[in-house]
Length: 476
Image (tube, rainbow, N blue to C red; front, side, top):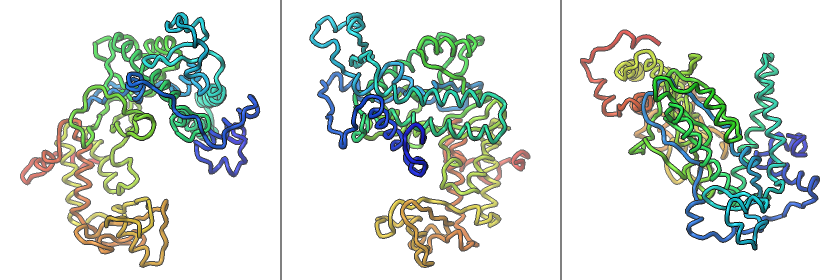
């Protein structure tokens, strides 16, 4: 990063992703092109007619997950999709909407656009000049650097060396990821919303082309989100996936990689969702013209078992920093029970045992500690939350907690108001509110069994007295 950005070591160490990207852009513009960076961005968004605005004002294409339990699933994704689109399609602030073919009525066709040294963005019909763009020049060395690190990781390296290469690859990855978002950031030194829209348009076209090819080859997409697809066979003998991946990569010009195989995957419905099946547009990164909107990652909650035997979790409670260790361990046990028995009843049996431990006081309060990051000063909070109660207790102890720092507490009496509601973890509490933590545990169980059609009411019904409990309930 020091080499690529020209920042001193200390600044590169704490600088944000956007700061490092902007530093690289400014350095390259000045040294290679003799262009000074503007002190303040001044170029306004260009006028757009309603029809074009309607077509452009969308994010990446998302195939909403088929909620449920799916076996023999493969995850495939495009390597550095957005940066490669920028480089392969020459997307840059000075190339998008260029006037190379202006004044020539014949430039309205694709053939004449090519003759004029331009090509057109799908759906949007923005012209892009073929002259070497600035943004591709910024990103191509980073893409090459990351590909080099990933190639080295394929070799049998000592663990220390492999960890270093993974860290280098990860650092480069996040700078590459941010390059797309910064095109829609109003204060970006070298950004334009039209570039952001063009990148999204290309990404949508690529996703649909890949979908068609996979389906023609006998594969079914159970979920897709911008640059990643989860597929499973839809016929008895589909085309070999590696061959299909190779064909798509060659056709599109961007590598499509096989990221992993799963024995099974469960896609979890969102709590506020009413459907869960179908396609959704405009909810990927940069929706609502990169000025808000949901993150694509927020759409996906799933867990599964890789072919290697390891579990993978995304979006569910045990991946959340605020989840107590007891609840996270319980959710992992629920997933293991589902894997072992393939039956929601077996999962609820494990839940029942965990609830008994909780209500009989056999859980160490330290395993129930909740960690929350403080977002503002105590006086600035308008609601009496657990965080506020914890801050009040810290204040009593003479311990300052500032925005950005964390508080750690155990809920002692959720019906109380004020500091009595919680106990600080550093005080080694001996009591807890069993009903509060039971609710968290049931919610964690619901995330595991909801893909199989079970809701919280059915879970509670399964815990009624007199039910038959399996011996496997007592196996961890």
